[in-house]
Image (cartoon, rainbow, N blue to C red; front, side, top):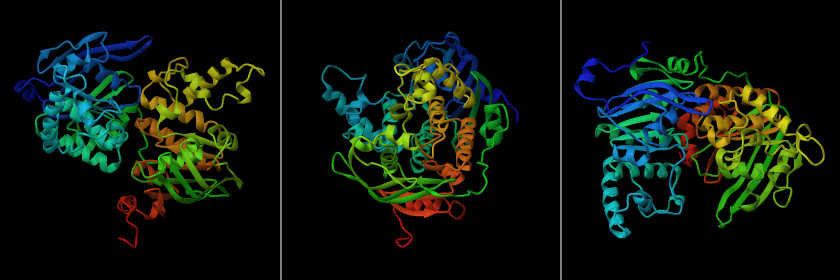
Length: 527
């Protein structure tokens, strides 16, 4: 495979590139996030940028969008040297960006979010009227249907993403940057997003796709650039490469794209759940009589479209949902019943019983973003004897040393325990949470979306850690929207729909179509 600029001289002569970055460098203190990066993006193309977490992808695009200012280098847009000191300058240059974590006001309507920052005058009515008409035209043209009067907090993640894309198009963006756009989408939502992106490309828009998912790169992009440790390794035409070659370029070594594991050797029953029901604070029943069991030495995965009770199940088992609603039913761990209400139904009691929990949303439930990595590594386990100096004080030196060890083991980048959690990439934030929970050697690991926003090398590592925990005789309950992940990791698969278990499958005797029907609520009898 030839690594280098894939565009031909004829293409370069025919038209200027939509984007050309020359010698971009950016450092954050001692951390060199980008080092002398140059890249060319052809007009009307879908250009992928891949690399491990911490490779500098998001930093580079944040420079292009004006969130950061490069220490050195040039930005050329449509053949013109362009200064982009802030995001307003990027918008004026025709650049829009959809961030991995959406920039939407949750209690505003779709229309209000669309015009936010580009209101025309003191009165909002004219701006809202104009936006409503433009929105209707954009929705028809690009399959971006969304209720303009809906509140953001009432929309699914997939529809919130459409709002972000509509925001960029409303601002007349010709260049659209998407940062890990499918990290929070179901497979069906991801497929719909790809149709939208192809439609945008057909209309002459230029799209930059930042992702770690090689399947998406191969499916949707025309060209792909690979970054590693802050440097540009090279660019290739997607049709002339393979997932294996890209993975090796990203990581610098050969990577296993399939989970290698021996057949499970299940032992005693660790978790028993019987007729578990949850009614939320609004009186809506979210869990409708869930019954399941997990044995030592096996992985039970829960498949389902997001919003069908999987999150609530993890929260009840992990002791998070106690204050959110009324819970009934029975949960037993190693034969002992767990409290569903009262003071012993919280996360601390669950951890003391032998349950570790990697929550689905690392930024809301897994980390305190303004706190340092070493502090986050101790959360929930700060009363452990090895972290105590005496009866009154924690041993901060011991906690920092433990954090350094975990960072080295899980390849957290940069390996700086004093760095705030918010300053790590999303994938490295996930590694911190996974390291904290897996290293406690729990009897039961609850893990939600373990590799959301995580690069291919880290996915391989996290999968190995989960399998190793299983092989050590521990029970694992895994929730993921990635069917590939569920199929390769699971020993058994349960499918949830509308707060109920629709069926259970052996991963060796099922396929995505079979699981998809159950995820849609279609049982064998109905089919």
